Length: 278
Image 1 (tube, rainbow, N blue to C red):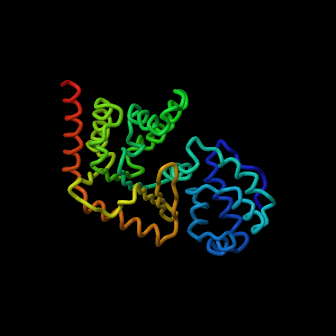
Image 2: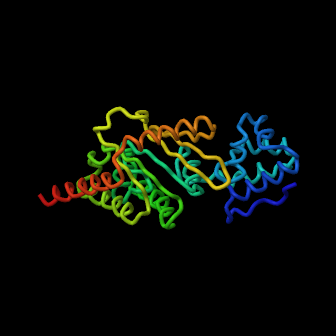
């Protein structure tokens, strides 16, 4: 059975997931069989084993009891509990780091991974207008750190549908908007991301309820993440994920083509730049 504690300098989720797979197979249980007493799906167990989902302490205790692992998972679960992101987003941020593809619909603000420092600062100040400068600075730094995922030239493949609303709503100032949209356009022109704009002319669409993020992984089932004001839910039930995937497909069908979208983004940036000079 697993014995010594995991090295927290390694990837704790991946190591803990590997140990879970070994312990489960040693016990002669399938992922579905282990999931049943935990009231979770077999695909959820698969995501724990692949390291795409965080193991919470309650699950760790039950897994130790079911698999007879002498408190191993309970002890090591603490290495996964620390996150620099809010509780409602921590798991989603960790999943992003493991994803092969990310598809995101952003209705109101630029996706976090596409934000400049100035844009992110204005967003956080809007959420927390009384927060001290050092708190805002830390939030901005964490958001920019997430964006480093795009330093890899190919993975994850990021495809965004941007609502026209976020092109027209001035976040901070026209200077901030021009810089932010130029940054997005540069990522598109360098072929690092795909982006489409959902124009006002599209009318009612399939994701009127809000944001949507879909993630796929190598060797693990896909996930969907839906988010509201200071809340978010990571979903793994295959039927639910499939329904959200259809929602995203319908969004892309209603959106402008990539070339038309790039033209609209750059035109909006030019308008903001012209307004500055005027």
